[in-house]
Structure formats: C-alpha cells, structure tokens
Length: 301
Length: 219
Image (cartoon, rainbow over all chains, first blue to last red):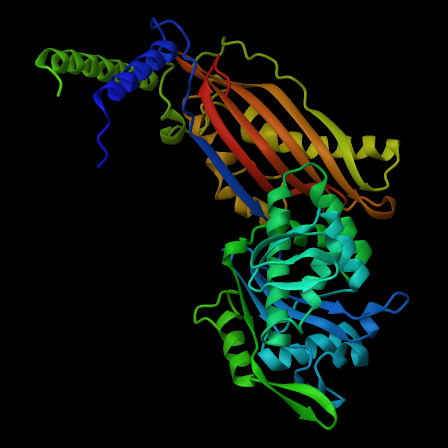
C-alpha cells in the first residue's frame, strides 16, 4: 500500500473540505446542485421471429452483371437471436465441393449462378442443416456503398498484410477502413496463412464491425433510415421496405460481443482440374445442430 | 514523524470532513422526498377518480404534442410529411394518454396502455410497464400533466412510399401526488413505428430511458 507524505495528505483533506464547502447546500431550504438519479432503460423490437437466419452473400458480379446470377464470393450464414442478443456466423468457403440440387457436385458458390438465392439457400441448408429465412446478396459496388452509408468500419484484424488500397497496410488489431479498404479486407486470401478459411474469418469480422457501427449510431436521427435505404438500393432482397426496416431495427438487438463465428473447415484438393475444398460435413452439421434453435454456439467450433 | 498535536488536529479535520459527508449523504437522501418512491410504489389501489381523493384538485392543462418530420431517407413531398406527422402524432398521443395522462388516478393497472403498439410490441411493452408508463407512481398520483411533448421523426420513404419511421421523443410529465412531493418524470429516446395492414401507424419497438426527480429539479 502506498503511503502518502503527510503534507500531501493534508493537501488532499484541504481540497476535500473545499469541495464539500462548494457543493453542500448551506441550509435545508436550498435546492441541491448535485443529484444522483436512477435511470431506467429499456429496449425492445417486435419481430415475427425470435431467431432469424440470414444468408449473406457477396457476389462477384462485375458492373452490369446481375448479382444473383453470378457466383458467390463470400458466403456467411448468420443466426441472430433477437431476444437474447446472441448470434452465430457460419463461414462457408466458397470453393466447398458439395451436392447442388439438380446440378450434381460442384463448388457451392455455383449454386447462385445455377438457381439464384433460392438454390444457394438450399445448398447451404443441406451442408449445415439450417435453412436460412432470408438471403441477402450484394455485389462489390453495393457493399462499398453500404459501408459508405455508415461512415466506414473499424475491424479488429488477426493478421497484418499489405495491399495497394491501404498505404499504411492492415495491421494486427484495430484498423479504421474506408469502403474500398473494407471490401479488400473481406476479399484477400493470398497473404493469409489459411487462405480461404481466414478470409471467411475476416468476412465475419467485417459483419461484426458493421453491427458495432450501426449500434453505435442507431440513435442518431435518420441514421437507420439512411442505412436501410442504402441497403435497399444495393442489395437484392424480396423483403418489402417496411419488413426490411423492422428487420434492421431488430438486428441491432444483437450484441457484437455475443456474435460468435466459426468457419467450416475442410481439406483442399482437386475435382478434375478445379481446385476445391472438401468441407468437413460432420463439423458443419455439428455447428448447425448446436446453433439452430437459439443462434448460440454452446460447444464452440 | 508527525507530532501529537498535528495528529489531533488532523483527526479533528478528518472527523469534520466525515461529518460533513454524512450530513451531505443524509441531506441527499431526504431532501425532495423519496427517491425510492418510483421503484417501490405500491400498485394496490384500484381505479379511483382522476384525483379521486379530492375532486376539487385542479388538473393543469398539458402542453400539446409537437411532431415534426426532420429527416427523410428517400423522397417525401411537404404535404406528405405533414400527413405523416399528423398520423404518427395520433399514435404517439394514444400511447402517452393511455400510459400517463388519462385513466382515473390513483391507478394501479397500466397493462392496457399499449393499444398503439403492434400486437407483438404490446407484449414486450407489458414486460416494461415501469419504464413505459406511470405505474411506479400510479398508486400515489393525483394527476399528471405533460410539460414537454416533442417527437422528431426520421422517415424511411423509398420512392415516395413511407415504410417506417423513428420518433425521437422527449416527454416530461409533472406528477401531482397531493400532500406528497410531486415528481418530474422524463422519458427520452426512440419509438420505432411502422404501418399495420390497415395503414394505421403502430409502435413496434422502443429504446427509452426514464428518470424521476422531485418537481423543480432538472433530470
């Protein structure tokens, strides 16, 4: 325990006395200048579902192409428990070699090209055993526009790597990213130790950072409305604007710290001439079974 | 090493400071009535008259609810903004009236205060009655007056069609409790609104904080 010199102790006592003399009411009739008030807070959003599963797809569509008729570059199945604030993200490597209904075996990301969001939802559902309620698809430009609408994001990177879009590079820890830098953060795989798997982890960090940003600014007048409008303009969705508004408001109930991520593992190899990932189906099913009901991972990845 | 005289002096100073702090503590706890009253108010009485104990108690008029559209995401002509403001005002008024201003005080039952909510939203709100209504003070309330009622709307209107709105609300009520010290209840935050199938605006969510202070103090 630190012992203060007596002069300093007297000085502190004097300061305390002076403070008390200033803040205390001199008589009983005077209103106090300070108050300690109990504040009740509460937040709730009515949504028809307690647990929502959203398949988030990043399409590799180039300008002029339809985002839902190309291949999916990023595949994240996100479960959100709107009551408990917990959530689970399941990253699926885009080269996962799986059965695609009506098309035999192929990379899972081809499902979007063959049959749009419905078939993509079907393929992911077969792999992990969880059927998404919604499929949101966006392209490169749409993603950048949405990140721009919320003023950029701050990601917590596990890896340091360099890229021309960010002169200072991406460092381990916090990185404040503009929309283009955010897109690259979710796309690069070569500088990452485990390529596609680590990229999938980076995409989850991007989703977490977007949620963090939205929660920080949700009380700012017009912020949620601007964000939903940007999402509508840049995403393919069959939800009505009112449904999307309600869903967006409900999603803010999820706490970024309770949003856990797993990437479905597997081994790399070849199917013919194509480089593919043979996914660990047992792991995918186990994660799906664990999180299906409450969107919470009790047993980890 | 300090001398005995110094130590005695210091002990006296410390005793004085402690005494003053204790006095401050007791002053803070007793002045202005009972800070715990809001949390512990007994909801035991049934519906009485509005200021039922003394019908002659004048009930001051509340300030009107002011609703304005301040932000629009999308497009919304001025006339439509006014229409939205007016319809949302009806919904917010219905909630505020039912939860605070109307009813016969002293009052204990506030569960029917959420007719302006979506069915699911009303269910959630019933679990938050002490936050969303005058229930904590209801049993000792004689009358309630709104002294501030504003709602600034951010509206989502893609292609000119209104899809939803957030109301930034700032509501202040003066709660008259007869011989007991009055309270100033401040409710601030957001109400989330959308239209139901009939086109009526309904509250589907909230993010609010509430404080209660003795009348005359700011919260």
